[in-house]
Image 1 (tube, rainbow, N blue to C red):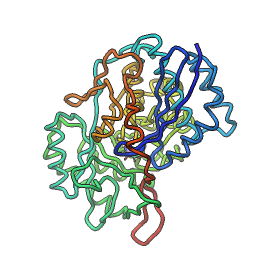
Image 2: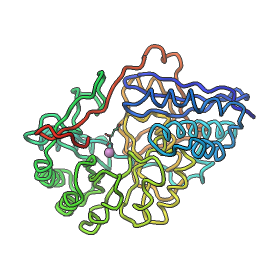
Image 3: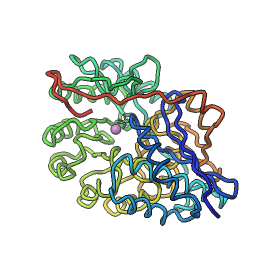
Image 4: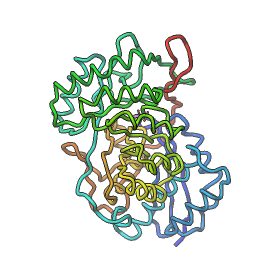
Length: 404
Ligand code: EZ4
Ligand code: CO
């Protein structure tokens, strides 16, 4: 059994995606997600130039050896572009392997640990009233867990707001240079506890409420926010502080019982080793596609299990249905699953990626389709060409460059 061809498809069905298609001499192919929001062409070129030639002729069953070949073989280890590229190949090989064996991928990862996968959505509004309305709409739609973000008085362009009315939340904006947002931490810290007081009162105790700080606080500011939100029993506070300094979480952990989530920008075990070993977080948010694929994420999940940390994958609309399916198969198989983010997709994205997983009443469901259960509609690829788009950057109101 041999890998015969690797195609890297860059397309824009409502937003940019990079899809990898690995072909075998059995006429079966596997699909991987190589989308890295705002840096798509760096990954596609990387795969075409540096990974594809080494894959031709290898057995698609040798997922561990191929992963190690690319991880150790690059010499310049880690990094988002490198690990997303390796991850896309790894996902495609697991998809291919499961298809060749005629089983859904989770069967190769430990079988079924659960029947359905809890999801959370986004309930975002401009004001207190608008946010409460959005959260109640999501609760009505069946979501049991809702991420709450709202506009902050005095700040016009901030994280978590929809840019187009009626559209799904989409932070990437098509342009030649990144859009600039603005930020003021003291306004934010005063606003958020008031928001959660009102939202909790409106939705009651049954719904899980989540919030994303998007890496903007210092440890002591994060500790204050965690403490002040304790009465409202959040499911988690996500990305309060940038994750480069894992040790920063010691201080936050010592001050608050609000559960902490982190890791959507992580790409290896070494980004979270201290966090896991010292039990500084409760949920690890790594995406399978950005974390180097199924092969390393299975090991990371095992280390997390030992330290009471749950795997709760990042699931924005900039991870394609292929990347989402990879995470769904992983979290179906492991014991320590928390919650999966799910925002849904625009119509064009759904047409581009026919898929077997289904969202129903707050949960995602897999079926028995062999492999990942996701395909790509090749007829639509040329219809939706890549359009350069960037995630925003962020400045304080005095112009200082800040975290986005
Ligand atoms: O910033 O998907 O939890 N979700 C998030 C997202 C991410 C974007 C990055 O591409 O924080 O909004
Ligand atoms: Co996030």
